Image (cartoon, rainbow, N blue to C red):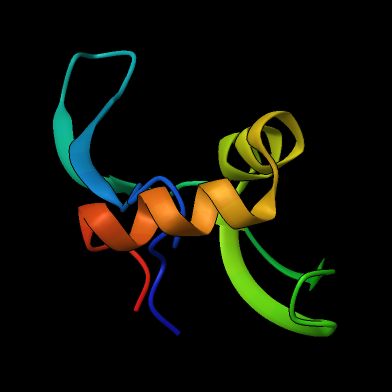
Length: 78
């Protein structure tokens, strides 16, 4: 399962875990991805998306139709 948000395009990034003695080891920072179903009333159907918590807030603010249209333009959703 890829950890990429289909609305915002957020993906894992690499950083350092820093110990008390300041030793740095590489680690991954993952976005908060949820698999969530959304209803599209215009098409009268449900779709399942992998979205981050920020993506869910964007959908709540703009609406599912506008969010999908914007994500398709940016290439995050096919």
